[in-house]
View 1 (cartoon, rainbow, N blue to C red):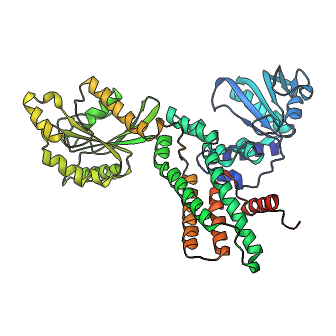
View 2: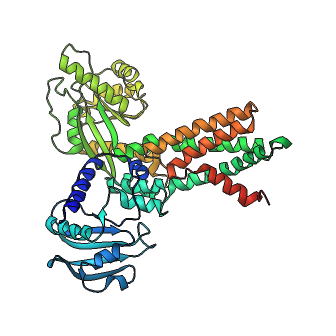
View 3: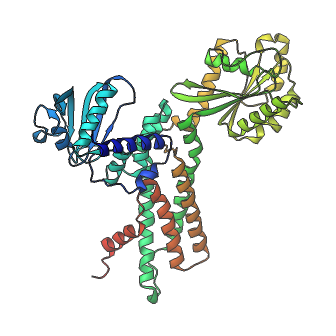
Length: 492
């Protein structure tokens, strides 16, 4: 391999290692990369496997592979065909391979795409990559295949980001949200909002062009109604982010309560293994213990915490502080108390002073019900004033299944029962929605104050720009001009 090729590969490996640790999709959209080059990368995970796949994209992809392929002339073959042959480089046969052709525009990137399926030896993969680079390709940047698909109009920016979410999804629910976004769920919703708003923006631009004639093309009443409708739609999308983000990263379930309530016993029972130390000595758990549990396709992040109480022990104080912070960050709180030790007044105090600080859904467990005799039934009635309270035992398998079902119900009430809901799971999308909401509020305020059209126009453009940031449609002035020329034939 030539020295400059070695430098290219070295640079590629360094960038791959760095950017694989980041979550900045916009880096590749903004970086000035020559998209006329033919790029190449290994598409299968690192390590030894039965099969390895090398992918190329670009106008010269077929020609480059054909130059090292002993078999049919690939340049003469049709799209969506597979060909058996050998890869030969510097008079050495590297491997017998299958070459798949996807010719532009009927490919993932809308360019010529070639995929080489070979044996999964790292040596073979590396030598084939060297041969391809030697014949004119360059190493692809992380995410560059999907970047090209976006830039070539294969899908919009939110759908491009969904590709990464689909790959990273580790549960049915996370996959469902990512697939919904990939199919254009949020894109369709935003397109409706932007189209209506662009129509009014175009009319207001007309008013500015004919300002001396003091005419109004945009009906202010209709505009006000539209703005309130858009405001409601954006608020609905924004409100789904907390849930969508939780589904994407796993539902945080804080297991909290006083010392020796049975929290560690419950996390062990739910996981069916010894995750946490169980002891009769109060304050055994000092730090939070986290593990994941999949229930019916949804990932829950169970977090066992230190018992909450006043203490002089320095280490235990830190544990209590972490437990309180975990409550604030949780999506669901599993509050466990010892039915044989805690009074009704104690529970009431904990609910008011500890649980009320969080907006998370809560499930209350009166634990150790197996130790309570029939005389406790009447006392149970006193506790019954609390919603979502159940009398259970961590040692009863039926009770463990009950809690799993309760956790699942909390989630399904939010989203899974509604297949039509559009859920926002991307922090960048949420931020853009918040900014567009703020701009819409500015427009509504200025309409009420009868502010001139030029100021209203600027705020509408700001709202459109933030909505367009989500899907990559950010050339707002071009959108407005296209609407004006297409509908009103100005200058004719």
